[in-house]
Image (cartoon, rainbow, N blue to C red; front, side, top):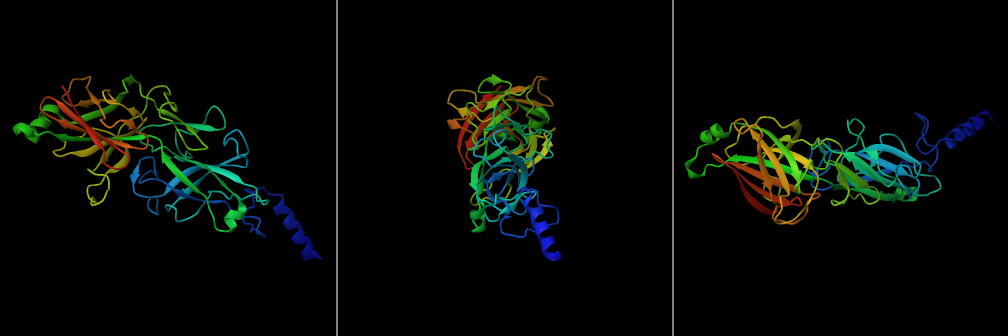
Length: 360
């Protein structure tokens, strides 16, 4: 009789807990407590820290995401009972991952709705914020953060019990602007002459986008479908604070190319000598644009040790028209004795078209 009474009391305790509130150390006594799991996938350029990296999600390239859970199909922020948390994904599509805290499917098999945001803002100085209603969230980006989102998925207990887990598919929302540099040694010039004429590259900045000063640095993400329209979802948030950061290497990985691959850091760009051959020196994750022929898509401000104090404006024109969201643009600065020659390419993680300009 005593044993039966203890069992009843224990079951009553468990029944009184919500799906995410199982008492610490307790083991579920029945199949109703099925823990929520998800899979994840993202493209070939990812971010597991606050800088982009190359390669798929894996044990050595983990992706930590902010995951929102709602029991209603409405908003994820203010439109329902929301459970924010994070998941650390360690394999592209292969494994299912658990929340950092336990969360369970409703026992009655009613659905839950989930979406994902990157970066996870647990330790970030800049946080995801609620948008105009429960359907959106906003993020102010800084240039070193690969901002991504994964649209809504619907999941329930019976699916998980049968081994079916939904997948968060992350989309890149910004444009990765990569700066290469090299000394132009045509006409008998030597590296020493070019470096003596310019000195080191001391600063790189983005001062105009599509001819407009003060580029946009805030994105509003629609959570249901993980979209952020280039034409309408980006805005300026106070003083422009998107910087350039150090990187190295010459190539994105592609078929037949396995050496001199790009490597990104979180370190702010600092004084760098002009290299003898084209190699990456800086990058910034910036607002995407809809490129059109005949316009200055981006305008850089480049300063060197021996340049005028105001620096030199370098217009970048992409001959390939279209939306650059989720793409990388590579700008190569060739330093001549008295001029900078800029060429640019844009692509969706593959090789793309080019453009050339001369800046006096």
